[in-house]
Image 1 (tube, rainbow, N blue to C red):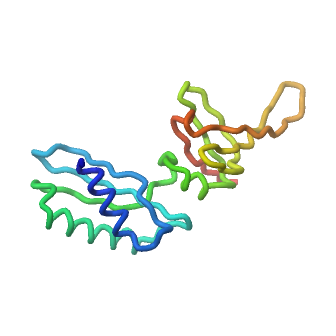
Image 2 (cartoon, rainbow, N blue to C red):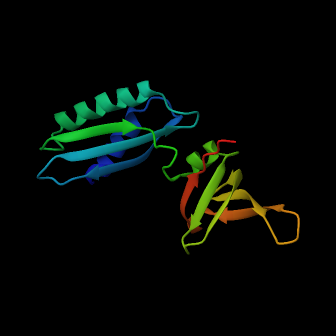
Image 3 (cartoon, one colour):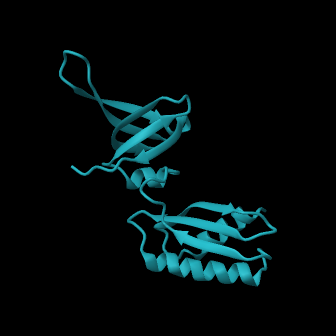
Length: 157
């Protein structure tokens, strides 16, 4: 098992409330120098700083006790920022009602209001504007298998 998976498994076991989950584990640097380990967590109803702090302490102790990283390292445990792409069905569900920009694997993209998540598919209400006609809303069913990246759009309206 690789280090990323070991960390993800440990953090998943450490999270006491099932509403919290691991979004990503990133390791930068190399084994000979200082490494930066970033663990991104999320929750179905948000994530508090206390949860991040508890996980950080437990993970730091685990890494030191098991001597999994023999060199100096920097550990960061946080929630993904609003600009971080959505990476799992639970994150899509959490963001129902928000505007998403979805980039497809073929390079095309679409922006619309996330209306629903059903299995591995999302429903996105997209505004269609045609010259000389009134804009209309079209619901598009999108398979998550076809999504390269989806990011919540920030609105200041």
